[in-house]
Length: 379
Ligand code: AMP
Ligand code: MG
View 1 (cartoon, rainbow, N blue to C red):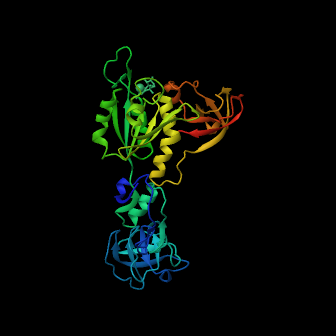
View 2 (view 1 turned 120 degrees about the horizontal axis):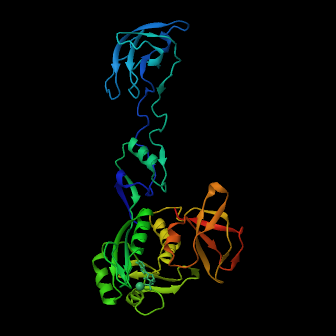
């Protein structure tokens, strides 16, 4: 994705595209760490109370200061600049809180309760490195440095296209043979969860001409097209039929679920075509689409976290295919993972109840309970 300057409000979760050099120090000036009194430490008695005339009042935000005359104090608030001549702040709790004169019960050391300018960041420091994922704290730092925008790779706009003449919009009545559309909802949410912008096109019928027509308005407006359905071996495979004479290749991947896959370009726009069964579509998104989207935004970490865990029940898996079973992994109750539901790629509720994929390698056909597996988190 191209690099551009974006307002900080739009940068959460994006990747910084260039080092940030501090244009000023933080704190920008010496300031008080406490509500209290700015003094010269040497003016305070060591073993008894001291009494000083209070000559000024310095709230936070004051921009002009009077020098501190010897033997006097200035009332000062947290974050307010230290007046010239003062070298310490006595916290209000150690005083009688007076506004004309103040009685101070304990002496302070020079420098006490003063936050030195540049203590946190020095002007010219490389405070944030290119590649940093922008989090609330890094955005707070950028704002503290006075930066209204940051250079980032922008979010890809992803067209999530659902095909199938059987698909009906939730909220409408359902006739025999029809189902409610769910892949679009799931994939568009996954796109957003990855930090990208999702545009949904949900009810494209299994008709090649209608398919081309439906795509037209989006071609200049999206960065990538993700389709679901219409790519397997049956008749009426609209995605395959529509894309095949363009620059999109269809193949079978040695995995279950998610065997039939397509990828390429349609009218110059990158395309990833996923199978239609809901679990296949979602697993394909996790395995192929999400890492690609993360890479496009400049993330170094494109894969989800994974862990090793022991399965609580036996599993079987087809020879020659990597199997992704759905699982529930609770790291707090020992490193165990419970398979949820069977291998069927229509078992959406089992997917909804799981929080990870259990990866069974290609050459493994049986795993007894207690066997160690790799789990990939879905969150
Ligand atoms: P297909 O690959 O188009 O033959 O679809 C395989 C299975 O997934 C069929 O049972 C479809 O009804 C179902 N399916 C395809 N697309 C969707 C969708 N967007 N929402 C829910 N189910 C779908
Ligand atoms: Mg279909």
